[in-house]
View 1 (cartoon, helix red, strand yellow):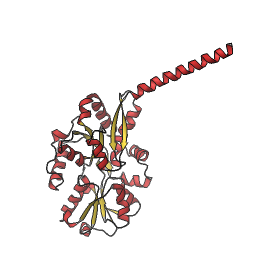
View 2: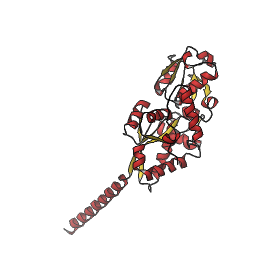
View 3: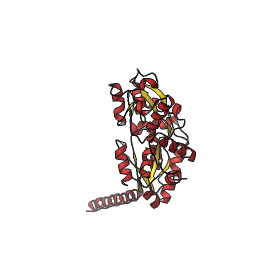
View 4: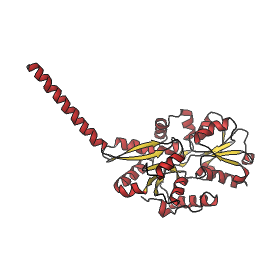
Length: 310
């Protein structure tokens, strides 16, 4: 009987430990979940870096839940309806939503540069694109700006091409089978064609618009207004982890979250950088001027209305 009693005492002790662990896990789960939307592109690596840091820092009273989307339409719908708290998103899409009365604020850029004009091998100049079919992911995008800038620099306009919208994932295959003659889209989908010999780079974004902006890290105003301390800490971490532009660290994050082949990622990361992500008034005013000049938006939001200064 003493033997059985001792066993019972041990089992009760183990149950007590188990209950203690449950309580500890419940405490961890009490951290505020910040839902951040993204597309699986290298342009979202800044939010990947931020999540990795927050996951390791147990002193924060919030964590980040990344929510993956397959296209910009679904992501912006979730953002505009408040189903996610923020996102790495095409800055022009966020500006358009803001202009329509959706409560959004841009915290920082997602990256600078990092886009290329990819064309079929038989296209050797901008003039060769005349009458050809060219794909962009969305009219509200820096890819559309880059296309317009390239054409303007060479005496052409979008009226001289057949411009269509395609999902990023469809573009490399469409180029390879001749359905389109060129495209501009978020990475690594440009690098997919280049690294596999399916197409070539006609221009990098730096050649058309140096230090060009493309994606931004935005939060909903409802989240900002209800979580001032978290927003401040989140912003601080975001800037802190994205200042060194460490290519090895970036490649590691890209491999972890995107699962692309090394040759594709190595090609893609040649064109992009993740330092100096503050949205300056100068950068934003230039962006505003370009979306107006190229007919992308007639009434973009002002710097004061759209940018959350840190």
